[in-house]
Every structure is written in C-alpha cells, then in structure tokens.
Image (cartoon, rainbow, N blue to C red; front, side):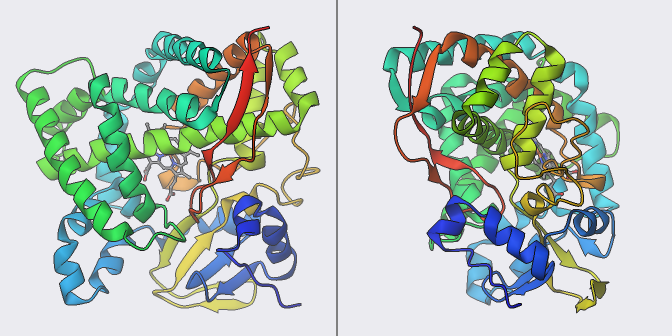
Length: 406
Ligand code: HEM
C-alpha cells in the first residue's frame, strides 16, 4: 500500500496521529520527498536508532556548508553559533559540552526552583481569573517556563519578552517551520543580538558570580575543560531556547488533552494531592500528545532498517510522536489514560542527548496542573486551538479558554 505524509496539510498539522499510524502500519521506514528525508515511525526502530552512532546529530555544519556562497556569508553568525550547541554535536565535542552543562544544571538547582515555580503559577492563575476568557498559551503556558528558565539562568524578568522574540525568530529556523519563508534572516539577526546579550551576561558573572546557572556555567568552564566564550554563550542560548518553548507545549497540549477528556480531568482533580498520581498524569500528557513530534539526524554512514538501505548523508526524521502511540510498546496507545503505568515514552529523546531539562519540565507541570485545577473551578475551551506548523515540535500557538473561580 502506498502511503504519503503531507506535512503541510492543515489536517495533518492539527492531528498528525492518523497519518503517522498509516506510516507505522504500512511503511515504517518511509522516504518523504516533501521532507527530503526518511521517516521512522516504530518505537523499537527509533529507540535503537537513537543509540546508533551512525545517526549523527551534527546536522548544522552540513546544512550550512551546502548553502550557496552568498547565503553562507549572510548567515555566518547563525551557522557558527548553532554548531556550538550540544544538541547538534556528536562525541567527543558533545561529551565535553554536555558534561559542563550537567555541572551547572544540577538536580539541586532544579529543586531550589520549587517555591518560585509555585509563586509564578499562582500569579499567572490570578491573571487568568481576572481575564475570564483568554489565550492560555499567551497568559500561562508561555510566561511560566520563560520566567522559570530566565530566573534559573539569571536573566532579569524585565528582559524576558525580548528574549521571547529572539527565541521565536530562532525557533522558526531550528524547529523547521513548514511555512515561513524569511526564517533564515530572522534567525540570523536574533542570534547576533542574543550573542551580544549573553556575552554581556557571562562577562558580568565572570567578574561577579551570582547564584544562577550562568555563573555556574562560567565557573565550570574555568575549572574544567576550557569552555570558550562562544561556547558559554551558546550553552546559555540553548538552555533558554530549549527551556521554554517545549515546556510551553507540555502545558498547552496537556491542558487541551484534559479538556477533551473531562473524565480524566476530574480524575486528576480528585488525585491532585497524590504526587505519584500527578506524576503519572504528566507522563501521560508527555506521551499521548507531547511536545515532541520528531527529531532529526544525518546519516554518517549507510544504515539498513526494515529492508531499506538509507545512504550516508541522508536525513532521518525519528517521529517520536508515532513511537509514543506504537501498539507494540503501549497497550491501547490511542487512549489518554492518566493512570497509565510503566510509561516509557520517548518524548525527552533517548541515549546520550536525553533531555537535560526533563526534571525541570516535569517539575513545572507537576506543580502547575494541581494548582490550576484547584483554583479554576470552571474551565473550558472558548474557541478552536491553533496548532504550530513545526515539523519537530508539536504545540499550540493559541489555546482560547474561559475560566472562573466559582
Ligand atoms: C516538556 C519539555 C521538554 C521536552 C519535550 C524536551 C525534549 C527534548 C528532546 C527530545 C531532546 C533530545 C534532542 C535530540 O536528541 O536531538 C532534548 C534535549 C535537550 N533539552 Fe529538552 N525538552 C524539554 C524541556 C527542556 C528544558 C526545560 C530544558 C532546559 C532548561 C531543556 C534542555 C535541553 C537540552 C540542553 C538538550 C540537549 C541535550 C544534549 O544534546 O545532550 N529541555 N529535549
């Protein structure tokens, strides 16, 4: 059977799961002309491939080296900066960059944020209640993680909106927007400005360390393997970027899943005091319609899977959202069941690049949902959700809701 994944169709953007199921059932190692790469959709194939060094994460250097000469010159800042992100590197560079980030982004630094997260959630719920009818993304799901990661990095709150604009401009490039044509020049300008901003921050922390991740990174770089100024700045930009967009989508997609399953919403409300139950519910939000649609790799060597030979240099899209609904890995995979146990979803990736911020993203959602459900006695959809067209991240641009405390 011939199957075709129309990445740009509005129906697929709104609900990719039927199309992903068709691929997984009929062509699990699929060549997509439209995406210019292979699409893997089976849980086992993806999990195995995520541990295979032939699938390289070093995909920015080849991308920029294939651009025409004048485009390469114009986008030089972007190319040089992105090549320093841990997530776009293989060992040994990845090992060094990740090792230094691990030293700064510790579990105690995450746990210390607990009171700040709860305080921010309450402030934002006050705002939702004042508005009554509002966009949940704009007034809750975006400002919560942005405020938390800014606090963790040591960025003043007044600058958060400026960072959001840069991050959005960068996002349409990194997250492979399907529809925006000027994404490269916008991303290049954003990187130039972010480089200057974080360059100043790192310099300030070198002179006078504070209790934040930017200071810890700077200190780790000076103590251990030397982290160049550019690498330090790139680590800050990566944390800022990775730290909010995805978590925004966990909160947005998670709330939408609950609103579309009122029985599950009630069950969560009834168990909001039970940490284990809340944690299981958040894992199910991550699995059932989590923020990760796909990851991208470049083949460093030929790779054979399911009788297909993929060639060195080919792009591979590991469709995490398809893996998370694979019946070989999950019982009744299309059911949204917040009591699901043994939930080995791949939403945070797998292997050496496993998400550094997973404990923080989980903590934010585990704190946010009980407070939201406790304080918003009435909550419902006030319009159609508007989905982003990224091929990598799955999330909402807008989620109109109405709510009240009575
Ligand atoms: C629900 C929210 C989140 C999701 C779904 C998510 C997802 C992911 C995924 C799938 C990867 C692996 C990428 C790859 O293998 O190519 C990753 C890596 C990463 N994430 Fe997250 N992430 C989330 C939140 C965060 C947060 C809050 C932070 C930081 C504050 C963060 C920082 C990172 C970093 C630094 C990496 C690169 C790790 C490496 O290359 O070794 N993420 N994330």
